[in-house]
Image 1 (cartoon, rainbow, N blue to C red):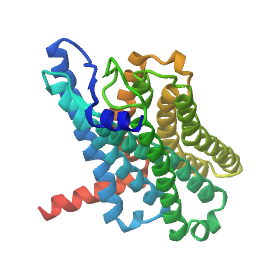
Image 2: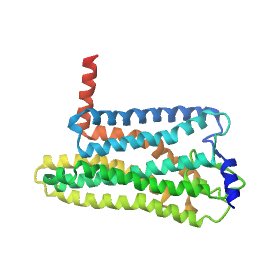
Image 3: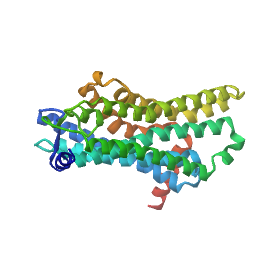
Image 4: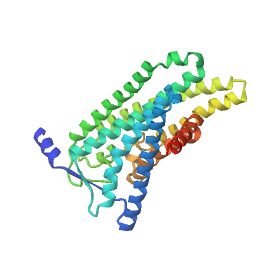
Length: 315
């Protein structure tokens, strides 16, 4: 068995199912995804640059936001290049079993860190609104760095576990992945043995990455709403809600898409639906996140305008 897995690791090639058999449609999708990819890089890079250069944004909230933008940039690089190459190629794009495992690792690592970091950002808003006088003491830089490090470590462990697991799976016959990247549910459908153990493993990891952080976010916002309702000033309540609304929009988008794919029975998994939902959280969400935060966040928007004015002035 060990020899078989070793040979399989070196010889197995997966092919991605094309989006369409019509060349014109493939070309249209290529340019659409390329534009979304470039917009994602531009928007998230702008957030990182502004937070880094503007001293007024050197606070825990924007520190977490900048880290989220970095994750989105790396996340886009994991999925987009191979997808674009597949759309631009006349032949079916292929990837080795090891390459598939590596892509799956970074996808789970970065995607999981993204989800957990959103719960950390909810905790940050909870402390800022419920304990404003103690905020700088509770959310000091040591705590902030520790929370980000813990997020990355947890996601790294889960990513390693699933990527090693895929290298041990027995594949035979059809090696065409009905997807545009190595997503675990899609790859699992190609296994020619009982997959119940693997499905349970995926479900447990999905619960830890999706359900538990989402419950923590809900609890945080329950306390936040209760605290905001006790604010007498209408302007104060409006300001408190505005700092949370953009985060809530991103949370609903991120967790909604993830739950549709990973928190449902494998028997009800639809490859077509999986591809469509995956397009949303791999190409569209990384573009929307910086737009949502910049449009809904007055401080970030003002910092962006100041940066643009300085650039124009110096030119």
